[in-house]
Structures are given as C-alpha cells and as structure tokens.
Image 1 (cartoon, rainbow, N blue to C red):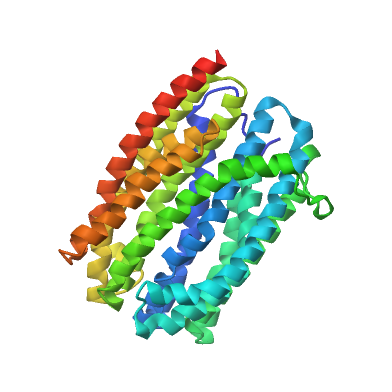
Image 2 (image 1 turned 90 degrees about the horizontal axis):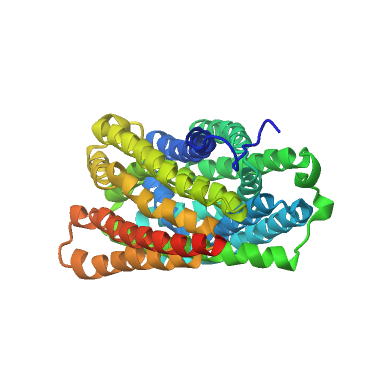
Length: 447
C-alpha cells in the first residue's frame, strides 16, 4: 500500500523522519489553528477574551489526558499484531478501539459540562475572564466525541505505517476552523463563543474525514459502523498500555494546572502572555512527541518480530533526530521572540510575559525528548507503567513541591518558569537509565 511504511525492513533513519514529520506537522497545524483562535480574539476582541481561551488549556488537557492516552494503547496493540503477523485479529482490534473512542468522547463531554466551571474557580481564574472561560469550555466539550474518534482513527492509521492521511484530514478541518474564527468573531462579533463553535465544527469534519479513510481501507483494516464491538482481550491490552500513558498525561496536566493557578496570581496580562508563549513551546514539543510516537510504533512492530538490533537503532535515531529538530525550532523561536509574539498581541505587558515563557520553556523544550523518546520505546516493548511513574515523580511531583516551597517564598515569574528545565533534567535521567536496564532484560529474554 502506498500510504504504508515497512517498519521491519530497510533503512531506518529516513523512514523515521518521513513517519514522524507528518505527525509533527499535524500537531503543529492543530496548534496553529488554536493559535488562530487566540490571535483572532486577541486582535479583534480583547486581551480578556484571549486570557479566557488560554486559561482553559491546562484544564482541557487534564480532562482529556486519560482518554487520549488510550489511543496509544490502540496504536501499540495493532502495531504488535502486525509485527506478529496476526492479521485475523486486526479487525476486532480496530473496531474495539473505535468503540472505546466513542464511549470516551461522550464521557468527556459530560465531564466537561459538569466539572469545568467548578475547576475554573479552583485554579483562581480571574473574575473578569471567568464568564467567558466557562462559555468557551461548555461549547468546546460538545466536540469531544469527534475529537476522540479522530485521535483513535489516526492511531489506527499510524499503527500500520500511515502518518500522512491524518495530516490531510487535519489540514482540511483546519481550514474550516480558521474560516469559522474569522467569520464568527470579526463579522458576527461572537468573541470566545465564535472560536469555540468553529473549533467544534472542525473537530466534526476531522473525525468524518478520518473515518472515511478507514472505511475505504482494503482487507482487515476496513472500518464499518456495523462491526463496532468491545472484544475483551483487545480492550484489556489497550487499557493495559493506554491507562498508564493517560495517567501520565493527567498528572502532568494536574501539575500544569497548579502552575496555571500560580500564573493566574499575576493577573490577566500574565495569563494572556503565557498563553501566547505556550503556542511556541507546544510546536517545539510536538516534534519531540512525533518522534516519541514514532518510537512507540516502530519499537512495537520490531520488538514483536524479535528485531533487537533494529529496536536499538530506533531509540538512537529517534533521539538524535528528535532533539536536533526540536532544538533548531526552539532556537528560532527564542531568537525571533519579539516578532513572533506580535502575531498574538502588541500589548507591551502581555508581550513581556510571553517572551519570558519562550526563553525559559520553548527554547529548552528539546530536553523533554530525553524522557519522552526513551519512554516511548518502553511502551513499544509493553512497559507503560514504569515511564508513567518516573515521569510523575520527576516532573509532576517536583513541580508541586517547587510551587509550594520555592515559588510561595519568591513570588516571581522567572522563579516559576525555571521549574520546567529543572524537572526535565531530573526526569530524563531517571527514564533513560530505566530504559537501558529494561531493554537489557527484555533482549536477553528474546535470545
């Protein structure tokens, strides 16, 4: 198939890049559409509207983190079936994954509607943006079933080596998002409600296109609504890999929610500035995440096929390529930070905080690759809980201690932002050492 990558044979360095880049591009594209939401409300509505949209990001990530991690479980399950040559099990695995996506989407939709307003209060969302933030969230979470169907559908496509069509789907949906933002905010003056409605519409288009691709697949990969099911053996495997990965996302988001609460204590200008700065760090992180997901998929197939040397090379090349690409992009953002921030705002106070975020976080984001890629390789070998626990301890636990013990004493934005590179260094060391230890044991078992 022309859309598939043979992960088990041939040169690796170029296949890893060609597989990872569409994933990175898809995530960056998605972030650009989110950035469009911010830019449109920042320029055509108000800084308060921009802060309302931005203050929701940690909360959204907290609520969707667990279920999004389940898509990693689906990826590993199907990739391992391909590596073992168990093609007869693939149809039930795919339809179990997509059934789980639908269930997860509706659970998230209900959770967002019921819990989000209370959590916004708990994280000290300023009163001047609270009403708009609540409205944005309630509209946004209506799109969760679409969001989950896209992510699980994309995981299915990537598990068999196709990372290009999820990008196509996202690009087409993104056009809907941008057009909707401009129409609803500039023409109809709907502010945060307008960008939320446009986002939900783009989620629906995204899910529809992805399911269309799957419904046109040949053989065992073809999707049909009539075949949706929940097969116990596949569901257990998805949950075994996906729940720890999702818990890592949830705990990460919780620690970021605590940091967001600290950011909120500086007022609306700081919230808006950090929101603008986060867009650049997210884009840099997406490169790391793409190579981490590439490591998961390539390792899963090759480990299931018993290709030990190829697994070693996947780790080494993903780390080299991912950190190099992320470092280059982070450097570009840092050098041109004053120009880039003006895309979102020209308010000097907001720009000041945005530039701090870029220098402390976006420029050093490549450090996350040390633990993300080694953790991805561990998940590809079936060890999902260990990188989760280590990341929780190294990143999340230390951040909570930092905010409580250090930031509370020195209430300064520079002190707050410095927690990111410190925790990345701690976590990277722990996860990498653990990866080499477990790899040695697993490869000895394969001999």
